[in-house]
Amino acid sequence: MKYTTCFRPAIAALIFAGLSGNAISSQGEWLQPKQLIVDNSLSQAQLKANEAAARKYATFWNTGNETLARDALAVNFIDKTPPEGRKQGPEGAILASRTFRTAVPDLRCDVEQMIISGDRVVSHLHFHGTFTGTFGKLKGQGQKIDFIATDIYEVADGKIAANWHIEDNLTLMKQLGAL
Image (cartoon, rainbow, N blue to C red; front, top):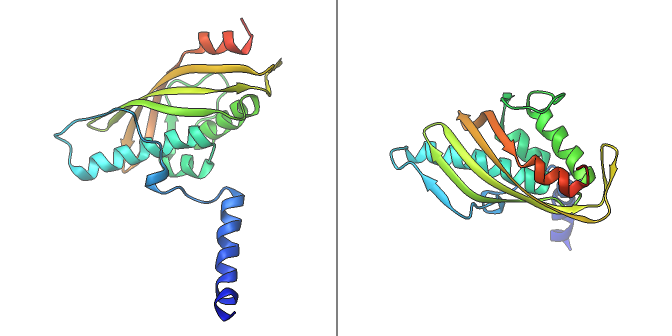
């Protein structure tokens, strides 16, 4: 009986952290690329730091866990190819995820391949889900969403400092019913 009383506050704190979205995924829970290509001239420390930042960020896109985005992105993160009106910094990416998850609540992201060389990581991402929400003036009718994106990250001090990205927006807009 004393053990359950002693552990009750700790268990409650863990449950609260999980329910509030503040739980931080462990490396084992981060998305694993289907194919990982690395520059063998990199130190193990740099390789691990670059891979960790990229995997955390991909897992953020897969889960919507904003803590992962804040952990992966530098405070002064710059989106080098933002859509019109997107805010810079980590909040821009977080708001983009929230907006897209309103349209596709079951959004998932797979990392088809990841290439790590120098201070760069290239991630070939595959997004899929079901359009059941709203996207601008469009209302989902249960259409399947399935498109790819490629991100190029500049990593500094274990954080993504900059991102150049391109999404297959033509396919996405057709699937959303915008075209």
